[in-house]
Length: 425
Image 1 (cartoon, rainbow, N blue to C red):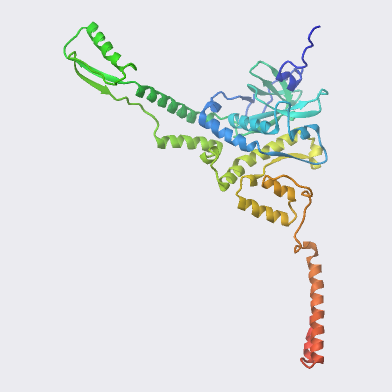
Image 2 (image 1 turned 90 degrees about the vertical axis):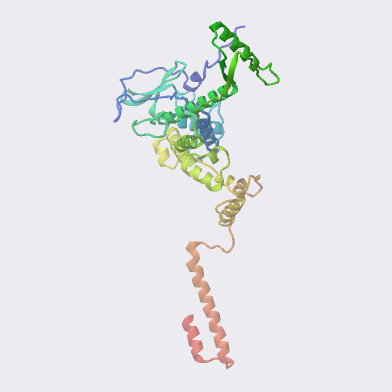
C-alpha cells in the first residue's frame, strides 16, 4: 500500500498554507523611500561572544513576561498565547525569539497562524525573512517576504506585527544595527591579536651569529641542526651550540593587543547600544540595578509587543470595547525578602491582592480560599467617612451633655456648663 503524503512539506507551508501569489502594482511609496525594504543584517552581530551574551541575558528576562488578555472577546489566538502561540514554541520561547530578532535586526516580524478557513487566527509565529519589501496591492500595503530557502509570499500589512528599534529614516522598519559595526570590528581585531600573541608566544625563536662566513648549504644545515633541539623530544629543555655559532640570542615575541582601558571602552559601547551592563549579563545585578534595567529595556519591549499583538488579534471595534493583550512581569520575584514582605503586606491588607497573589511573590503554592480579597477592620470607605464621623460626633456630644447635667444636679458644676454642652450638641 502506498504511503500517504504529509499535509505540509515544510515549516513555510505550515505557517502560510502555500498562499497564492497576488499581482502587485509596484513598490509602496512612503515619505522617506520609494522602495522601503528590510534586510536581515549579516554583520555577525549574533556571532560575537559579548553581543550574544548581552542579547541572551535580555531575552532570558523578557521571556518571563506573562500575557494578560482583557475583554469579553476571547479569540483562539489569545488563549493559545498563554501557553503555546504556535505548535513549535512555548510562550517563553516565542517571546525570547522576538526579543532576539529585534535586538539583532532592529526589526522583528510576527505573522498570524491561520486556520483552514484562511481568516481565523489560531496563533502567532515570529519569522526571519532574508528580505522584506513593501508593495502596493490594489492600493493597500502588503509585504513581500523572501526567505533564504527561496520561498516567497505576500502578507497584508494589517496582518503582520512589526516591532522596531531606532526607527528614523524608514517609515516602516528599524534603521538596522550597522552603527555597531565599528565596535564589532574592534572586538574581532582584539580576538585576532590575542590568538596571534598566543601562537607567537608558544614558538621559541633565536638569532644565531655564525663564527665565520659559510655558504648557503652550510647555513641551512646548521640552522636545521639547532632547530631540532627545540622540538618536544628535548625533555631536558637545554639547547647547545658549538663553534659554528659565535653567539645565539633568543628573540622575545612582541604582539600588540588592546589594553584594558581601551577594551573597557569597547565593552561599554556594546552595553550602551543594548541598554545593558555587566551585572545584568553576569547575573550579579542587585534589586535597584534590575529594576532600572526592567524599566529601561524590558518594560518598553513588553508595551510594544502588547500593542502589536492586540492590533493583530482584535478589530478596531473590539479594541474600542476594551479587548487587549498586554505583557507583564512579576518583578518582585527578583526583589529582596524585605521588599517582598513590605509590598505584600501593604497590598494584601488593603484588599488589592488576594492570598494567592502573595503566594506567587514568594513562589509558594496556592491554597483553598486564597482567591478571596480581605481588608483590615480599621479601614473605612472614603465615601462613608463623613457620615460615620458626624454620627460619632453627635453621640459624643450627647454623652458629654448627660455627664454635665449629672454634675450640676450633684453640685459639681453650674448651669453654664450645661448650656455649653447643649451648644456642643
